Length: 337
Image 1 (cartoon, rainbow, N blue to C red):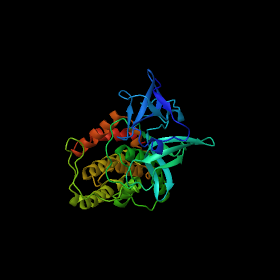
Image 2: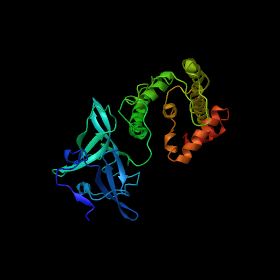
Image 3: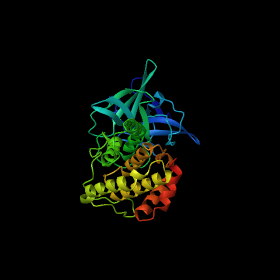
Image 4: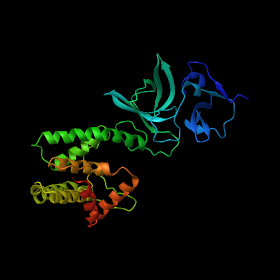
């Protein structure tokens, strides 16, 4: 019995009118340790499945693309049918689209992907998009566990989509603000600069970018306490005044004093925790800004490339907030050049 019935040319995506009443569609085949693995699309549930309980024969569109990388490789660059991706649309109406790849075709040797937005309110509807490796980013194979995204401005339906967008934007945006402060010596490194760091990182992603939180939050499963929102503005002003008068003004060319200033700032800002989210990233950018405008090299993000290093860093920050700054000092000392 022929398990997979190859469909005629032109039926190249799962929402094609000829497939509306079909429950299971053979979507793709990819390499695996034991040879190849077949993947199917359940039209009724709108989900990707592996064919252990598929009743054959089923119609197939797997012939429209051939893949070299394993579906199970979550670090792959190859975009496949069934993947969740981010497409940089580049229009002001909606700069990027978080979508699932539901079809593919070639026109005059150019590859086009059929995209179905993951968010129900996406302004950009289901559409064909010309594939450009610089505008498409793999997010998920749609078989790993995913979590719903909080309210956002980019029509991201899942948290991993937000994470990917932040990962893409951060290096570009961070570089811009650092260059701006290095070339404009009149800019002050106070509260405005810190809020600008947060705004720079999250503008266009969240409505509250650069704004202090209005809600109480708890950080980590250890019930790590943060400042009550009603006290944030007062404590931020107190921090900035103390940071400027007792630390920054005495730094000069002295590396030890620069280190002391960075440890103090990180500890205090982590305790205040002024923003709803993204505090750590804003703090790290702010510290980098401070160090570089005073002639030092400092990039804390570069030292957080593994899960182990991230856990150690978060532990160091937590201990510093509790009054034990030695671990955080040792960590920052390795980075400050």
